[in-house]
Length: 109
Length: 115
Image (cartoon, rainbow over all chains, first blue to last red; front, top):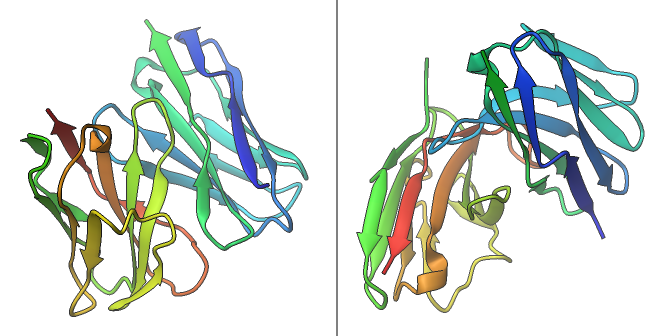
């Protein structure tokens, strides 16, 4: 059964305190892994797509990496405006986007 | 910058009433998706359209939910009758490509509360 598991469920950081979020997945033949950011009461905002192990993508203070079993979203020197829920999703065996439950990140000044 | 539009943003209704949500995808996007997101969980796919045709509605509770995209552009999702368990965020997304779920761009969602 295809599964996407994100950890931790919640993360509280001081401004400037770098950290990483984890997304582990079990899916046959990965066809794409996506990271989204979601602010309270809003729809998810697309961040990155990763297709193969070893691939990396960067955007401002965010860097996403991919291995054969998991992906990491690294937040370097976060700012309060990076506070959000970060969602990971994979294209499952049926070609559908399957989401994890997300990691809620709070960055305090 | 082009965006997915949804309305209404918020809807409060009583159980057994009918509700409808509207979505206008990014211009030129062939594929349209409706998702349901319960608080604290990730979005779950309800229905996928490619142009005006339903590609996947396996998770749509068809006894009470219906969806259409008559001209292959905007779409409507209806619930009749609404139940307490339908309270959730309903998200619409669109993708420029056909076939497998690729990069999807989400609208702001409709927050439904059923009393």
